[in-house]
Image (cartoon, rainbow, N blue to C red; front, side, top):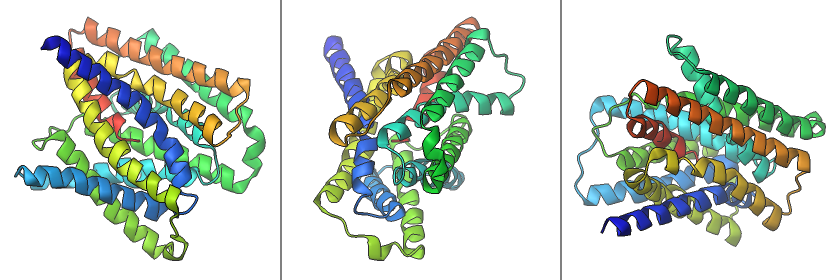
Length: 319
C-alpha cells in the first residue's frame, strides 16, 4: 500500500513538473485571440467555480470573516497582479522568456523576507545563491538588451518584474496565515475573487470588442482553468502530502525548461546559447538558496517539511 501511494505521489509530481511548464505556452496561444484581462478573468472564474463547486457539494464550511480579508489580499497579490502580469507581458515577450524571469521568484521571496525580518540570520549558502541567481537574471536581460528600445517590450518587462515582486510579497504574507479552510478551497476562492475583479477591469478597459476567441484560444482557456489551475494544483498538494518538500520543489527547476523547450518547438521562439546558460545559472542560484535554507532549518532543529511546505504551497499557484 505504501509503495502504491509513493508511486501515485511521484506520478503526481511528474504531472506538476510537466503541466505547469506548459501554462506559459497556453497563455501565449490564448491571448492571440483574447485580450489579457478578460482572458485571465474568465480563466480564474472557471477554475474558481470548479474548485469551490466541489467543496460546496461536500458541504465544507465557508471561511470566517477574517479569512475573507486574507483571501482578497492574497487574491490581488497573486492573481490580479502577479499572474496577470505574465499574461500582459506575453503580448510582447516570448513565453520562454516570461518563464525564465519568473523562475527567479524564490530569490525575490528571500530578499523580501530578509527586509521584513532583519533578525533572521542568513548563511553563506543563501547569500551565494542570491548573488548567483541575480547574475543569471541580469544575463537574461543582457542577451535581450536590444529589445528594450521597444516601449511595449520594456513596459512588459517592468510589469512582469512588478508582478514577481507582488507575488513574492504575497508569499511572505501568506506563509503566516493559519487557514481553517482547506487550502484548496481557499485557493479556489482566491481564484474566483480574482476572476471577478479581472473581468470587471477588462470590461471597464473596453476589451469586449476585442474578445474574439478562436478554437485554439478556447482550448487554451479550458486547459489553463482545468489542467493548469485545478488538476495540477490538486496533484501538487497530493505530492506534497506524501513526499518530502525538498523533492516536490523540483518542479520549480523543471517548469522553466519545459516552457523554453515548448516555446521553441511549437511557437518557434528563438533563444541564444547565452540565454540558455543564463537560465542554468539562475536556476543554480535558486537551488543554492534552497540548500542554504534547508541547512539553516536543520541546524535550528525546525521541521523542514512543514515550513518548506507552507512556502511551496503559496509559490505553486502562480501558474
